[in-house]
Image (cartoon, rainbow, N blue to C red; front, side):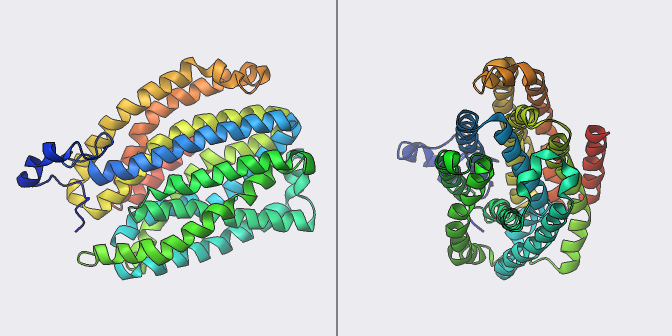
Length: 407
């Protein structure tokens, strides 16, 4: 078993800690003697770092979009991005829980599990994207620039690419190599920001969406190579002594609950922006989408810790209770200040994008801040249920949440 698990170090190792402490910088909770720390927080902090970097560069992206593109173009671009995320999420978002649960114990089947997940999910989302395009007239004026064969094929390719990119984050987390997630997403975010500015004159209407999509390959291709050639083989060697590859029946039983529950969660996170985009003007959709992007980024912090907790709970079930308590304590220290800044600073945060954003959406952003604190408890419990393969209860809870939001 790897020495980076969250077990307590032997006394002899702990005794050496003071001597070693000055040799390298450690993040809080990652010291050699931090019970419940180590790998749980290493993965969680890597994912949170990714969220922070993506938030900063994402803020720059939407600020540049608001400056170089009309509000109508921003509304259309954000609508297409929302639709892409929704359709890709039919498999990407719903399968990340299964990857976090089964990659830690897959052993020699790890590579096959990842490859089959990529291939099967890509086929499903391609079909879903084609159906969406066939019903495009039902979704309102924000999607009109997707008409045409070339634009339609480009949109299908974008959905497939986003599906793989999202799954790749789950794969890296399951391989306990989440430190690569912020690397890939930093490259993606920086490239799409550069392309956004470059396309402002050449593609004034679709430039927001095209710049987002074109940057995906820069992250997916090199990290995909690393997963299959380096990280997965290393994971197989590190876990061969205690690997228990899941049977198809075991995976099916898990997905029966987790996939159903994740579809409910998908509706809450990704369907709502699509519905809003189909019902309001492109300008109003720009206000809504940027606000939900900021608020949703705050929610990702709790989801990040939950993903790491699921992986570590699958890797070492005996530490699940201790890790859960540690995760809740750590998230309270992180989320309360973040939510406070978001709540009290809402008008100034949105005002950076323009007075119209602050006037229209300050109240909405404050509701996101309140919900982010409650999300910590919810996502932690969901992570425990996934680690224990109790996915039927997970589906019921996520279904209830979906009904409350959409109802």
